[in-house]
Image (tube, rainbow, N blue to C red; front, side, top):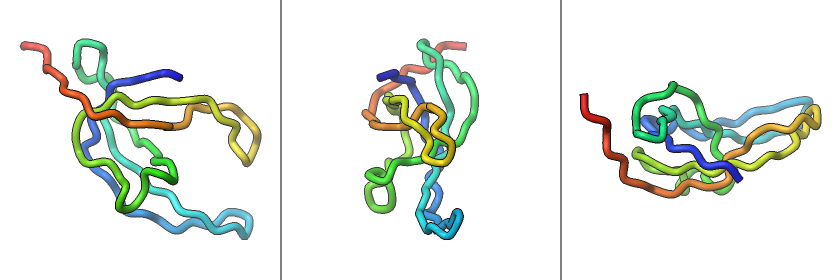
Length: 95
């Protein structure tokens, strides 16, 4: 399992989707990935897992995000999937 520091800055609504006649839901969070010293790395969108949606969605803030490799059901390609969030305190680098 790999861990990355992130700052969740916005959590979107749960969305109903459909693919090839199959209905499903997604929820995404806008986040900033951070370097080891807490500097901004890049801005990205993170898809929340089923167990992190709706009322269980994370609050805004800093986290250690844990990822694991999983096969995509559409094409069986391996990709990183969010499997856990642990709140952390991040000290911003001095300017």
